[in-house]
Image (spheres, rainbow, N blue to C red):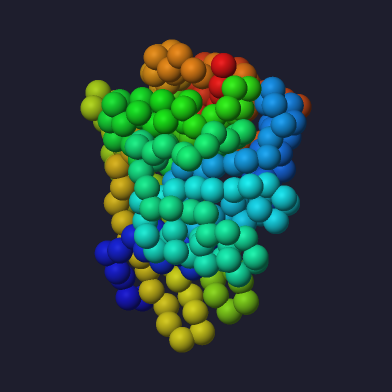
Length: 259
């Protein structure tokens, strides 16, 4: 198999198949969060680091007013082309999740698949949360999902998943290469095998994520005056069973609310 030192983010068709195939659990959970935790009707949504818009298109089809941003121009182009193809406005823009300002506030913002950890510094993470706070109307929600670094051994340092659409199949494996808690960085390798009727190849990329313990994120959140913690869940997306975050927690969804 041919191996390419390339990013999956530059292949939006394959990215969308891989990460968009299990959209419904997130979609349903977010809808339930809007109903349960928001203190205002939720109609306008924004997704920072929206990628290909795998959830934006679902929310637009459900009647929400949607928008998003992403640094990758290919992903934004793919997202906007799909929105337009289904009769919606091309509302995704090329932009930084740590430096954005919306023309008007929205009712909810969501970021559920670890994109937050791409922000490599404390300053960038704080800037992101301040941008979110400024973009939300009072009583609106920010639903943020990512992996925490537990105090003890992690229960999983490797994961794999796959998806198929017609004659196209995508299989991925992500594994942790090195964890440096002092410098707060984790080196991760992602390998994605692509199978089409005419070729097979593998994309291999190494990424660096910022690490967070439960206490470190709580300290960060404490510096953002406009946001309060409404509830915490895990990646089971069970709205009726919130979780208590402690030093052993790994997967967490923070439901934050604009004061």
